[in-house]
Image (cartoon, rainbow, N blue to C red; front, side):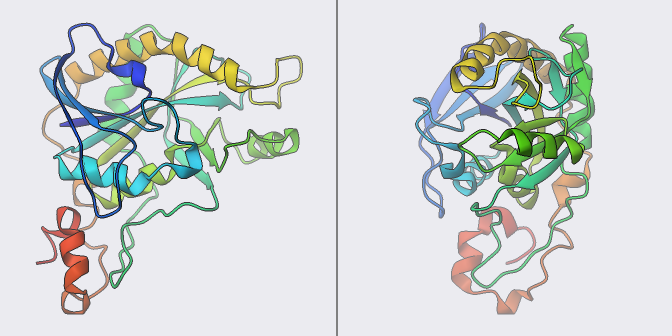
Length: 283
């Protein structure tokens, strides 16, 4: 099953057969909303609006652990994040698509791991997106005729405020291509859960660094995001036809040599809580 995390408009797709809506409980609380299970292009999908259907959850208050754990619990093996971002490069224009390849984390208050309460693990994160998803998604975006940038660095800020102009220029000096508020710790947690993760980003604005352009505001983001939904749906359809069912990527064994706490030293309650994630390694 493939998980889709993004806005609510994503699952208003022609020919999408909605099978059910499920309310998932996790040891970390409730996910952002009920998960919609559907079928499209012969693939089973799980849709989750990360801000909730009423867009009532700000970026720094999203229960990322519950969202990713819920996806793992119901059998999701891949997550496609579809995200609105600001562009930090002149040639990456609003309305283009960016298939993200790297992340910079500038968040400050978010819990970003499942491993605590008596268990320690250090997963590799040098290449934070799934290579198989990255290639299939890039090919799909190009095939859709949407102007696409293959690869790019997403800098994730805490929010919910937008950047100051000085910050925006600093992010550009860091080499970042787009800016958002949500994809971390999503990507960290997906890797810990051995779920493949990839981001399809749609710039809605130029943040505030680009003089001569209107400074970013919430209304601008929402209006341009709506315009991008049709593009996202088109790319998604092609991606579902292109991606293979079997995973042959390192993501599926990210925990294999990452848990450093000896099994006999892990509290039984922690083993039980994390069973969907660590069960194949720790009994």
